[in-house]
Length: 494
Image (cartoon, rainbow, N blue to C red; front, side, top):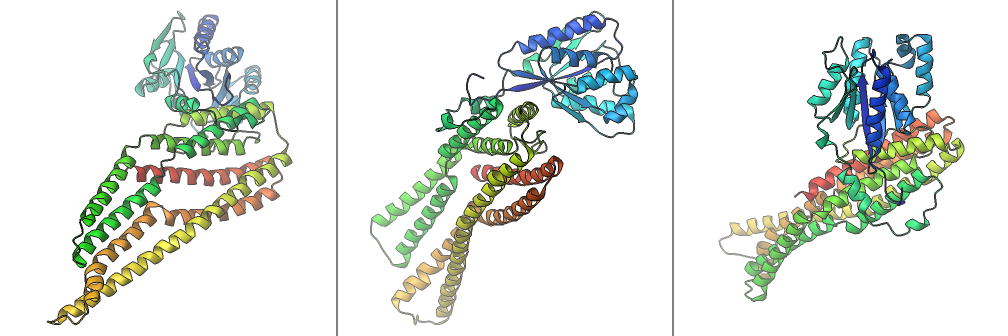
């Protein structure tokens, strides 16, 4: 990559095809030509995805590897069960290819083999951006056949390259839907480099790119944050002040010209802030930058694992799926090329990730807890005083002639019963606006979970046990990020 903080865009080309081929050499040339044409696009890095049944699957995998494309194997059955579909010599070829795969995944444990092959084919379509198929155009001869997979790809609108196994003619469908680049990742890549990027030393090119990327999106999120909670707090305060001015005019029989103008200024100001909040389009970029920064931070924290943990596979990515794919692929390639020592990685993860996050949540809990306590006290005090003022007014109304002095009538009968309930409602609103109940509870919960993770990680002796601890810790941290994303997006939409 020419720029250190630009992440590549990866597209996946999936494959399905017949096992029996009349012209295997011609099919191989057609597949090689189709992949070579895709690779020629400088804006996209391609990753190949296929199973390894005999016939065209093997040809596709070899062609992808010959062209230096990344290739993942997606198997319908566990290898011990999958090998039953091959002769010993054929399985030796498959095993050799599996050793060159960037990743080998098993789709399931289906008892029915046809169901397993069908699931594998449909999952290939689900995970690809483009399906390459060697298909004779005839209906499937059995469950899970090529025709069913092509039909599914067409049904969900995937771009398709069809190669006729007899004539080797190539036909393309819906190529107008194939995007050269992802607009969300392209926007993040276009952000200016963050300050201090030049000082981020890193020997691993992939990790260096992710570190520079994380640095700039983190600074972009911090710099462009609209501070909507502060603005919303200002809106609530202006409404309370407008109510207080209007009530004072009536309760104290004030006729100064400045009072109605002051009330008008408060109302116009509150409306103006609300309009700014609603129309501040860059807030969505801010939220997306923050989400991308935290996802990248998690990827960097787990970078030394021998296998890239698929921590984000089941989360709502809100348009950031290409980023997940890029981080996953770069991590996986780095793990194969630059393995890290177990003890070194473990101590680094505990020190930088777990202890760093514990300090972060402790710091934010210390800020949020007193604010929650003050707002709760404000609500209780305002509500109690409002009840007392209203009760006093009700008691006084029993008498035909008021027995209260003038200042009591003004402050306790006129001003208090109107302003104090508004003030109490404002305290409750600010608790909700600042999401204080959830934040304080989540900070405490995450500290407990991270303390447990630190103990488990300290005593982990194998990569397997450490990976399980890290997976739990990272999923908990990312779940908090996605909760924040949902709450923030919802709040900002009002």
